[in-house]
Length: 138
Length: 493
Image (cartoon, rainbow over all chains, first blue to last red):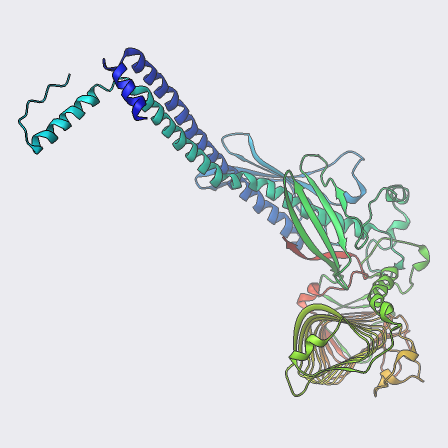
């Protein structure tokens, strides 16, 4: 290192050249862009993770409601509602799916298929979407 | 450019001179820019990578949470599918049902069901698990459903939900809960409101007397006893006894202290007496003990979580405390004195609960009433011993005994008898008759309520005791071979 530095000093005693300065600037610029992109990517991961987690929490609440409904004798129907969680407003949709085709397997007869979707109020893009079956107690 | 050092000699001046030279070098370090920039670039790259990595580490589980939830939902969906499959299986049984759907399969969808039944998957205890797509649309994962061969009088359904790389397991206990509402307290087949001055604090339901077994296999219904499953259940209980039956019996094994408990082998080739009269006997271990002779508990033993499969009689006496214990006797079971019992007690002969014995929840006391006379060795006092007289009962609650649980007699020729000072909470289920003179809250299901002085007469109902509704009746469950199955409990793993 010392040898390399001394040889460098001896050869470039004239100070910073224009080429050096330009290269340094270009490298700095590239590195800065990369650096900020990485930071933005990290923030996006965090933001998306939090958003998905909140949406999944809302969907899990809905799934628990569906599970408990059977014990309370509540008949499930389609529903849609808004709810605010950590200053973000989500839309939770629960829909009972009806299979019109004749190809319903026998093991799924008399069992409701339910879909739960969650999205932000400002966008229609679905954050999470789940399916669940809910039977009835004899 | 560095100026020559003209400072006079002296250490101080030499040092200053060196410092001046050094500063001059820094100003002349042309060509160092590139390595410096590279060093900083590497630092920036490392910093940014660390930041992104940390964010990924902390928040990746959040991105995974939807997968885990869908896997759990698949497992739950599998439980419903499993329940549906079991309840749809056609059974050889006695359709003495109060269902609104009673007999409906005679008229509707006969062709459809027969055509579908061929492709309907089936679940066998301990058999190959089913792998199914639970939903109408693919892409939400699969569920694996298997029926456990354990579980005693209840079925255990294991399901695993899979979605992408995640999977969640669920264990479901299945049993029958035929009585959902406390309003109706009597389910009887014999016509007419009961005579005898008994107190009836709820509704009475009369169901068809005729047993429609000639119709062939039908789907499970609420008050149906699945004879084939019941026989298989008893056969499974008998299996360890059959395996050890040929072995010559040995003298009684006496357990008199907790230290002795370790001496009990898996198969006791003779009677087993657990006597905690002089020393404590505590035995808490999940295991099964096969006893080829009689089994007797005396003193104050404290026992939990053990299954006893016994060829002879079982006598639970004194202040024995048995918690979550499963008892099976090929002959008879006696609960007497001040004993306390919770768990399942199943006998092929009589079961007697007397003195101040206490049966506490969760408890299922079941007799098939099918024991051969020759297998009964000891003859206790009371009606259970009346070999000469025609036998009308094989499950007795006597004296000041109290029961909080389910009492079942599956023999249509026999029944359940409760005496005057007994207290019962729960369900009395008899395929034959019931003579009730005690106090009870819950439900009685029987072909007829009979007079204890004239138990042969099943043409009318006679009740001397009291029966009142029990709010929590829907929490009392019956074994899997009675009625349509429900989910009794979930355990998500």
